[in-house]
Length: 151
Ligand SMILES: [Zn+2]
View 1 (cartoon, rainbow, N blue to C red):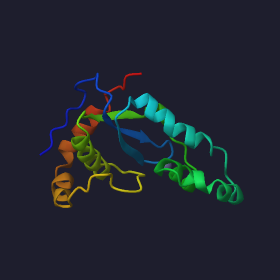
View 2: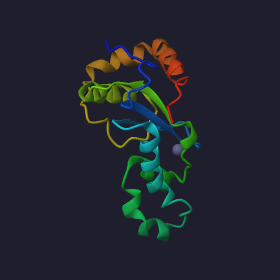
View 3: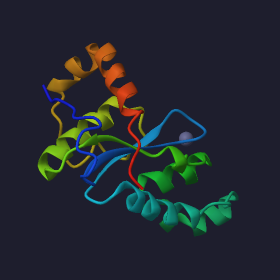
């Protein structure tokens, strides 16, 4: 079982993070080796460039930007607004390989807008454990929501 070091080692920028949507329950889950603020800023620049585009024709023209990431995809296809202010670190791990495994676990545990299951191919053997142990995971997620990223 993977232990989640939620809230530990606040100094490491390497983390798994979650960016929620304002309009629905879905969130984007990703991992980064950079501070969360810088990562969010990069995602936001792409989304801001397509914000306010609502007609089909304009959307078609902006298609290349829309397809850039799972977040821009969600904004274009659903016309939803991303809740940047509530982007948060949900797990910390400085080791890249371990971080990718954690990212895959969090993607599977989150009602996500991701286009894939992450870089690590998490075996579906884990599904039963991840889904039957929901109470434990909910408490982990609740604790994770108390973690404030450093700015
Ligand atoms: Zn949404």
